Length: 298
Length: 319
Image (cartoon, rainbow over all chains, first blue to last red; front, side):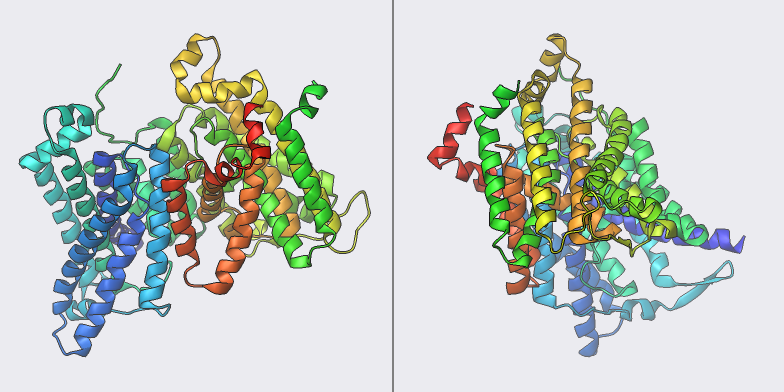
């Protein structure tokens, strides 16, 4: 019983964090039809920036809770700056190319972002535990957990609620839905698709960076730590259906819980289980579990 | 049939280039020969991706077959004590063909990004199994003993190098024959319009399945050769998604223009890596990523399209 509860808690924490990253990925795919491998780069940059500034803020004597402002600030800054740069320099040249080539181009961007981190932040790991220490830990059903990881639920839920509200209740959301449904038709009725692309790409990038920035206090931020995350969030997005926010939520829950179960019961099966599920879902439902409906074109 | 093959200019050029390389191998220093062996081995896998890419399909999981080939060589030595070159190549290809044939039934229904992602998932399943299974060497993998030729164990790497060249040449000629056959010519037709191909009376999914098995066999042979050249197999250097990523990268860098392009591209890649590591160890991925972007932007035909400006090679186009 105790074990089951631990698995559930671990799984939910991991799922929340995967969801934040995967939501960014899925929004970008839904609107732009680009599978953005560089998302791993946004994630890593978010984590490094947050860890670096939290470390220096604490040296300068700022209070520990200040870390949360830094996390939010780094996510926004990294997402908007990198998002704008990459959209302008790379993606804009490639919108009329084949999907696969665009994926490869974002893979190139990912490699560049990875090495820029090495060049700028160096090879030593960064630790930014202050926000985690500030919140202390709490006993839940007989298990001690740090409050910080539990706040992840809140962040994930606000991302989910926020994007749901954005997509269904605002003018931007309506425009985005139109573009997802039929890009050409949206162009014809006068929607500025290019501008929508820029906004979407930056929003997705902010979410990717937020995932990294928020996880930074709980891990040692070291080179190459984004590689696994990018493959796992691919799995989440593919399982849920590329371009669907509820899909990303379900996918993240599935992958998070499965991973926690595997880690506690059968550690040798961790990666295997996740990709087995991904293969199974793709075989049964090629578009993923919750893929948005497509307009039929003849 | 054979006459047609011998008069095929691409085949002649490929044979000439690879034989010249074999002759040069006698004079080159050992590390260059080593690098070239890695390049040629990887080149065979890239040739497999080229076969798919001509139809507009790209597999992000060819590390699956590369790894199967490599592990087939290592495990046949562990379990059966095999070390013969020809047997090793055959076993490596066989393992890849069986897996490719089985998975092909599923993959032939997919296109574009879904094809790429499902291949990735399959290769990661294999990676997950290998990393965590003690009997399959876990993360350490196996070392592979020296390759023998009908019982003869030659000194140095020259013989292995020549044998690998022979295999690559054979594979390149076979692929060229395939691409010039009716089935091969369907390649571009399918890329342009699948429905029209169906109306002409050909089965698109069957053509893609055959293509997929061919490309798996090539990647399997490549993995086998890599295992022999490297003397070591482990999951991270044979199956992980970065291995598949490298193969895709070389495919784009080399360009789809000719069956010779993958080998040239892979050898260039091998030397690029060696030098980039030496000159700028922390900027190696930056160089690779930058090259990838530049090629996608400015050189859609890859390195081969540069070579095609040489008059001798340009004539091949009308072949």
